[in-house]
Image (tube, rainbow, N blue to C red; front, side, top):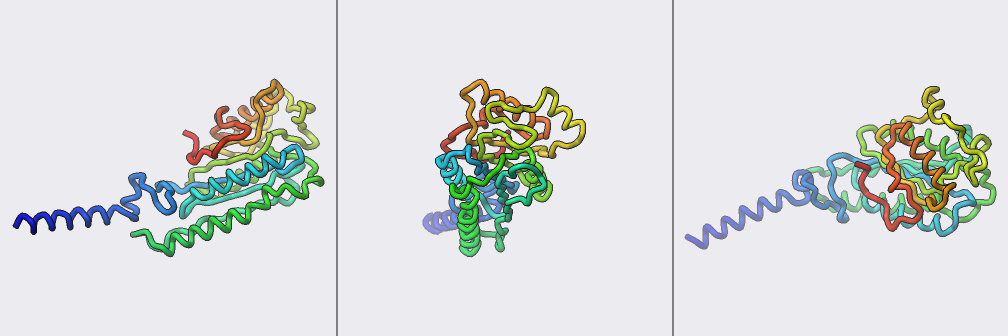
Length: 260
């Protein structure tokens, strides 16, 4: 009788354990899903912005590719990826951008091999496609770096992916350089009050809730600190979440979770 009761207890424990593995209920508590990805209750929008101007070294572009691939591997079903090469001079240019959503699971009640394969193939294809955004070749004809205009396109990504936790990774030295503003060597910085004027005129992009990380910007000189201060004020005015510790030159890895 004792043996029979013990076997029954093990059977019940095994059934409870199986019910919590590979299911939405079991993963909702923060367990790991496919490929070690931590399950989340809210899907993500991950946006990458790439600066391919000649002021960016080949090493920085290679680092951007590496960090991008590592970040993409952590995405899950229902997450959305968007990528932008920085515009050169203005919004009048045709953008070079791409966006797709990782297919949802076909079977939501349990982990299925078919869903895992679909996700893995999508992420591999995304990594292959985004290689063009970090290509070190053919950069001699780039005429400028228009970060400000490109952020308007990022705002469109936010509007199209409502309900997602949104994170932006900017691979750039953050030196806006077009006909009206040239931050290289502080040659033509925005005048005092420029951000407030743009805000009052309604010409800033709406980046409300967007968590911003900068990769590739220096902070070790007085000039670079002045550039960083501008972007801090700018992102705050657009409603984005920006912390100075997330403004870096060569991070080891990209933070996975949006700002808190």
